[in-house]
Image 1 (spheres, rainbow, N blue to C red):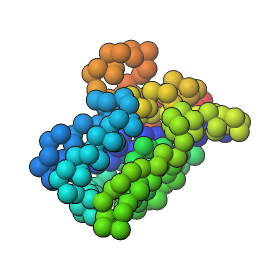
Image 2: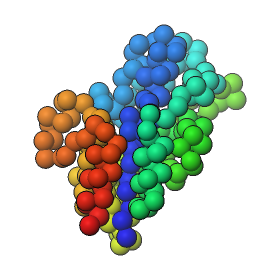
Image 3: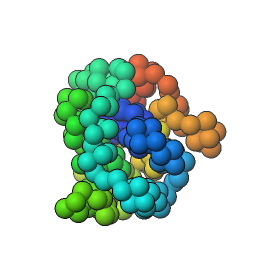
Image 4: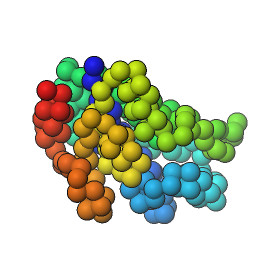
Length: 200
């Protein structure tokens, strides 16, 4: 049995933090896992900036409500789900992702959760498990499933490299240059074709 594991931000929906950086006028928040491989360090830094500016969950959710999936993402996901089981594995949080999942047809999503105070301040975050993407792929494999994985950032490399087939999608020049062994695609139809081929 094949399960295709996909990253979410940058692959199916725009980067939430970049959208919020633009909406809030705080350019520092544009930093993502494409720039910072250490997710804990990145998130703690983001929470510090939010606190400094007095921003909380409500403001971020207002931005998310205006975000749509990337052009062609829902059609790609619908087509992929017609011939493969699919799990979205993201380092985002349920409080951010839920409205976007509605727009994608409610696919299965494994992600993390935020700790939010009564006043809406984001006080911390709870990761589902250590190295959640790689850990999830290995757990699926331990149950007898073959995995195919795709993502765009440093935190996707573990699951891509551990899978039967793995692909970079709309990644950075730096990540592509560092990992020339991983096929890299820019268009959904190319990625669909590669996944179909891997399942033969």
